[in-house]
Image (cartoon, rainbow, N blue to C red; front, top):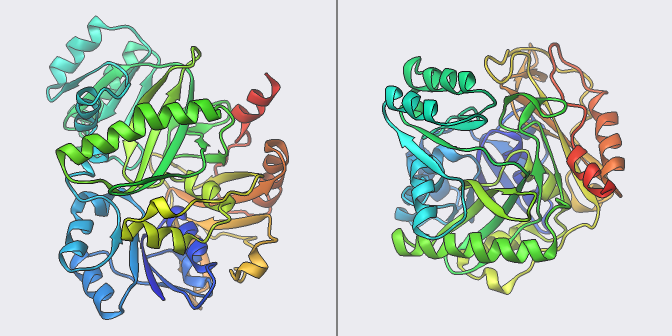
Length: 437
């Protein structure tokens, strides 16, 4: 069986790695992939990003199904193109992907369908946005309307910061077209959680819960990033809250998409705020798995991912359930010098564990894995691994408790070195504090 994963980050490495563990003869192509996927037995990088070429490849190689990792190809209509060519692919069509590609669309969609979310206003004029801010109090949240690779959200603790954020997006054009419009919304206090489901157009299969750490530095300080670490499960999500999220968020979103576009297929990620009073509000929707949440969630998955995906692309998710390891999975991101604003490339990475065989019989006993994100092959023999992006590696472990998983993750991470490496040392602190309550 030949499979195709679209993307080049740690999320895609984790998806490919997990697919490869399935029984039987499985070959996974990753387009375009990274150094980790290039060096792993059973995986093969495909240096292609153009959608027509990917469609042609899927046809030529008789790819059983394709999984889309990142948001950009979804925004470009990759699912529409594959479907038009009769190729099986897991992801939402371009119109449905507006839940992620436009913050304004998502907020209006939630209002139309009674999905709880923060109060907001949208602006295409910097002057009007500044006037609105002058009427409000800080803290307040500024969001670029379009895709900004995890850099389009500013939680402004002062009005001066809020005004600066508007100027950066709308006047200085630092985010390009993504910041041409901004959404300004009320600041919410509480715990952020990630709630991800698989949807086949008719049925929904919830995945394990998770939480990620967005801020660059320890203690949730510094700028927002794409994510500096994550863990699964999220202890704040009780069985009762899980049922409520499905009832108040996931099912209304699926029903709404059915009414407005067509039945939603693909991963749907709801970023939620669980407030001190127990209420929930949606911070954002993503039309793909989160990163680094994917690495932690898939590390706990005991079910055959190929089987789950086959049900997903065939519309039979109601016939299958996902089984999870009872232990905690925790992921620590190792980021490049200068991340998130201007990550440096080309630093040589030392101390990486040798790429392990990913046969199920061998990996099932391993308690850690190092997934590659922004890495590339360099050097005379093409085997030297260097930094090639903002988030470089994601060290993921399993542990009998959050504390044990945290300790083990940093034991592994501290053996890996590259100049300018940035890494938080408190991933999992929310869960540890939760267990102390």
